[in-house]
Image (cartoon, rainbow, N blue to C red; front, side, top):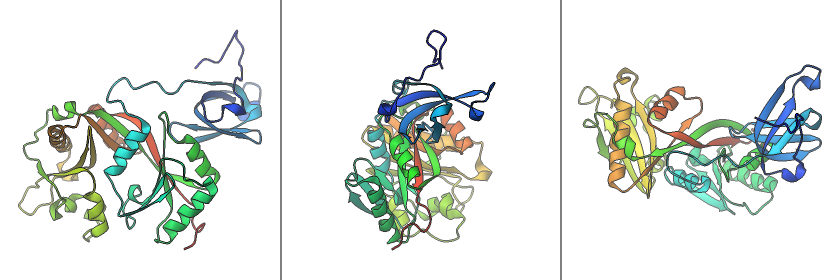
Length: 343
């Protein structure tokens, strides 16, 4: 990263650059002689009280006291992707939301408040695409009370790392005491290569609904000793064109060796719940499930693929790296502090 002009470090940003993507350098350890430097690239989300806040692609907020700032400049938006399908942040966010729909939702201006009896954060969080029509503090108060009335914690889902994403909102949530609880990558790839993978998809069975066998492998319920309720089945079955894949186990009544779910939505095919039993791993079954679902999506006219993977799931990320998936942006779930809102 280069900051120098004629050998000098320069600060070429001001509070007027809030909202822009910047690259900044700060001195470490309070500026003592011989101290090192660290560089940060992200969106300048605030500059108040002598402190700059920069929200990075990963969603981390970095706070920099003015005396520690030794260089800074505005930089262009992240370069356009060189492989995979083109997609805007808003388009992809709306597509992913349609593939995992809540049981109940309510509009707050351009925000969507979503609930599904607590089944997954995605279906029980605010999707803030647009202006809520209220100042942020008032909007969050409304959000908190809405979820408290349903006996649910209040979450907001916000994205970072793509042009038009929500670094400013992430910083605002943190300023109001909301804390990031989990982060995930939204990855995309061309669909046709998935259908061409060398995988034995002949054993994979496809169905329009999740039957008892499929659910017995689904990790959110396989260890609970109980059947999922109606809200869970509604969420799993939601989407424009939903497919469930399974690879039978070793006996007629055995738990499936592997499962997966895909939702076809126009040019997009989303992949979820791809799981392989521990005793069946390293046999290519996860790839076989993805391939079978990709071929069905291609038959329905899709050409692009997406999936979501949590940032700490190294094994899944490695698998999807090998399939050609690359990160488009990240999303984060921010949770309100306990006890802030009452029914």
